[in-house]
Amino acid sequence: MRIAILSPGYPSPSDPYNWAFVHARAKLYRKYGHEVTAVVPGDAGVWSFEGIEVRQGPVDELPGVVIARRPHVLAVHGPYRRVIAAAYRIPVPRVVWIHGHEALWEWGAFLRGMTPWARLALAVKTPARLFAQMIRVRRFIRASQSVVFVSTWMKRAAEQQTMTRYPHAVVIPNPVDVDLFRYAWDSTRLQHGITARSLNSRKYGVDLAIRAISRTHNADLLVAGTGALEGSLRALAGSLRSRVTFSGGFVAHDAMPGLYRQFGFFVAASRVEAQGVAMCEAMATGLPVVATRVGGIPEFVRDRGGGTLVPPGDWKALAAAIDALLADPGSATEQSRAARQSVLETCSAAVVIPKELDILAEAAR
Image (cartoon, rainbow, N blue to C red; front, side):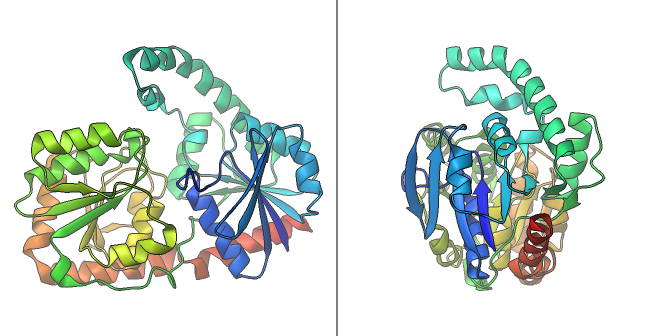
């Protein structure tokens, strides 16, 4: 099957975290023997990222780019304005994936401004932008025959926030390559924690993780990731004298399993999270999780069954949960095994990819 993937962005050598979870499934489609091309709205450009060809161009030129590759089906991810405009113009059967804030009223978007004036300008524009996006995405979802949400929470939240129901949609989590992310937990590494996040948004709660580590007795934390907030997060860690270090750059996806082997637990302190792909990949290697009880996280982390869940935003509870984990190695071992088992049952590639390919093939008929 020839599959064209349309998304708002795609990883590149200069921006390797950009919609990386879309790229992860593209590699798996190819691993299962299918041809994959990614197309992205934007300025004209062509590149290859880890073997996947990516073509970027203006919305009115993308139909020709896609048709030239004669795909059987179009996989649409992140239906924002330009993606929706392009999808309507591409005469190819489509399946639509809803991952998160493209179907949510994300009021915190204005916090992404780098200066007070930039944040104020975004705060003024955000309500109108969000309203237009909700109307646009609701129409698009209802007009698409096949729609996938990555968690039950995401489907329910999207229905609430777009004020309509999508009975034709299905829930399929983002996939985890459990052959790449093999079980390799070492109890002697228990006191060393890791969080792998994009540092471009406060929604991932890296600041909460830093505060939590500053309160623990002897745990330390590596922040693996880069982004615009890295400077302020480093400053926060320094001001708290928190035992936190930063990767200081991009870590390739294929290198993450080796990195996880050096650690004993994973922190997912998110404020908003539809699933938590990096968290699930860490769980596949056996890392117990200490996480906030938000979004779709409880669908993959059962309290005391693969990890510990704490109230949203409560960094003191995060610290207490980390200390409790380190104080009971026997329980940590049980949680490590349960973490791996949870991923095998819910979102391993062997479970997810055949479902996605079935939906794509059905749409292509």
